Amino acid sequence: MDDGIRTVLALIASPRTLGNCETFAKEVSRNVPEGHRLRLVRLTSLKIGRCRACYGCVVGNRCPVDDDMAFLLDEIANADAFIVASPVYYLGANASIKAVLDRGFLFFDILRKTHGKPAVLLNFYGMPGRIGAAPQMLETLAAFLGLSVRANLSIKAALPGEALMNKANAARAARLGKTLFSPGKEKRAGGCPFCGCEIVRVVPKGFVCTVCHGSFTMGPQGRFVKGKEGGILGSPEHMLLHREWLRGMKERFKEKKREIMKTIIPYKDDGEWVEPPR
Ligand SMILES: Cc1cc2nc3c(=O)[nH]c(=O)nc-3n(C[C@H](O)[C@H](O)[C@H](O)COP(=O)(O)O)c2cc1C
Image (cartoon, rainbow, N blue to C red):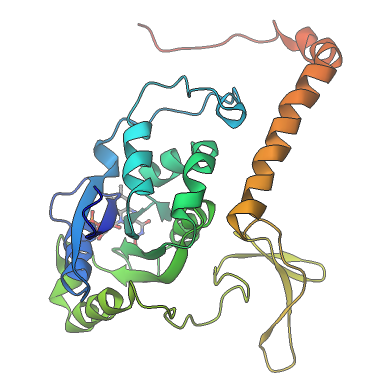
């Protein structure tokens, strides 16, 4: 749609009609002062197949998986801002988020359109503190689409709509709506000093962010001190270098095919594959 009206795309990773993800995303949209249309995609209703690791798309071939991914990418490419909302399921985001992320080689084709567009990430969880790795999973999706994350909030709410029964949460939705298209980010408490992600790996010399892979240490006042950037995020040109690397991998596979086959074929008939009866 090229009618000059901005599009806010809400990616709803919950199967619940009028659940917390849906109602809160709509409340954020109601508070966006700029004129816009809200489009919603229920990720859990889409048919999203599995990546076949053929690497075809990285060399410009059509993805062989026949599903709703092309539809979804088209919606994403044409949006101006994003609200990504997922319930926490078993200490992670809903599996539909990972299903889309696993098809992330296809993001390269739309990266120049998505890069830098604003996004708010929302995690809804029912039990005190049990958010697990969910915020990191939404950060990862946003990172590989090159989105500019305005805020990544975890909101406690178990029953449908419970998030908005709480006045403080309704105020958060209002604030998010107002900041979605504004240049500044919401201030994030702690987290990776490069990208804000809260989940880090502890390594002998400090920490490595699990999203951007930036390394950092803890300074004397308990503040994080930046070390080296991780090299994963950056400009679209920089991020597209990864596609070049993947293309190189395809070439290396061809070059080493003989040696690869010699290594793997002897394992071909080991064990017995079990499958459900058809
Ligand atoms: C299968 C399943 C797993 C869940 N796992 C968690 C969990 O690990 N931690 C948690 O705090 N809440 C968990 N919940 C609760 C949901 O995150 C919570 O109800 C959320 O508000 C649902 O959002 P929705 O209304 O948009 O679907 C789980 C719910 C379901 C159905």
